Structures are given as C-alpha cells and as structure tokens.
Length: 85
Image 1 (spheres, rainbow, N blue to C red):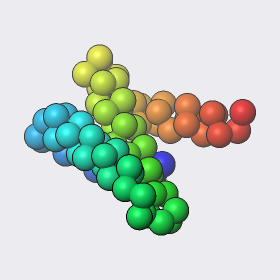
Image 2 (tube, rainbow, N blue to C red):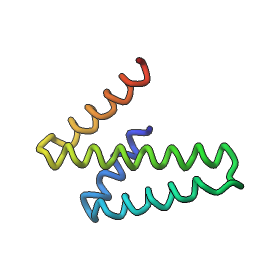
Image 3 (cartoon, rainbow, N blue to C red):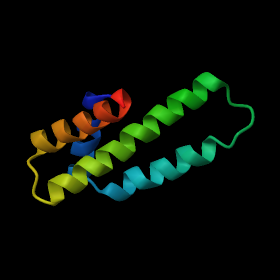
C-alpha cells in the first residue's frame, strides 16, 4: 500500500462519493477472474484494490471524527504492524 495513493483516493471520496471507489473495486475484482491475466497484472490489480480499501477505511475513520492526518497515520501504522507480525 502506498500512502500518497490512499491520501489521493481519500480526497477523491471526500470530493465525490465512496460509491465510485466501491464500484471500481467490484470491477477490478471481476477482472481478476480472467484466466489470461499474467501474475504481474494480477499483482497490480491487487495493489490497486488494497489501496482503495485502505482509502475507504481512512474515510470511515475521518467520518467518525478522527482528523485526516491522524487517520492516515493510524491506518499505515496498522498496515506496517501487520507486515512485521
């Protein structure tokens, strides 16, 4: 996951609507079922999906009252903590 991408997507959600991201995730998940996709392509799609889910989670924290910067930092700390485990 990349913090700049999650931050950008979080801004997109704030300016537009979370439904755009959810529909994009559904579309990308559907694409992963193509048997002709190469592993590298699946990796890129997976990374995009992960970043979108991250942005949705950050947006939820913001809606629950967490300041944006703190929400982004908290989310990334959790991600890094799960990688270290």
